[in-house]
Structure formats: structure tokens, C-alpha cells
Image 1 (cartoon, rainbow, N blue to C red):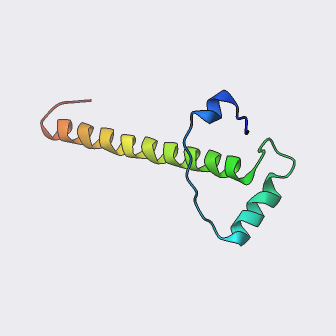
Image 2 (image 1 turned 180 degrees about the horizontal axis):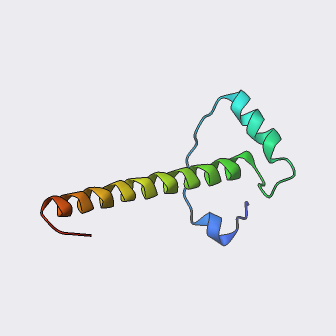
Length: 76
């Protein structure tokens, strides 16, 4: 029987393949850090990257709305 922490037991996972040389580079870089595995590190990197992309997209959308309002004669 395999026991998992309660928070991990409820999560669903998938497998993503990356080139072995990249895996090895990440593994070497995380040695001595707070990351317990390459998967943990890659998950962190992906979350940060997606959050940054979402912020940029949100900023572009806001700018587009501001420009449309200015074009209609509103001042900001």
C-alpha cells in the first residue's frame, strides 16, 4: 500500500517528457536547493511562467480598453 500526503492524494497528474540532457541540467542545478525533485522544479517554473504570461495578457487587454475609451473621447 502506498501512502501519500493528503494534499497530493487528491491531485491528478500527467506525464510530460523532456529531453534527457535538459532533465540532467535541471537535476544538477537544483542540487542543494529546496526542490525535492526535477518535477517539483519544473512545476514551479511552469507556474511562474504561466502567471507571467497571464499578467502580460491582462495588461495588454487593459491597455486596449483604455485606448478604446480614449478614442471615444474619455480621458484617463
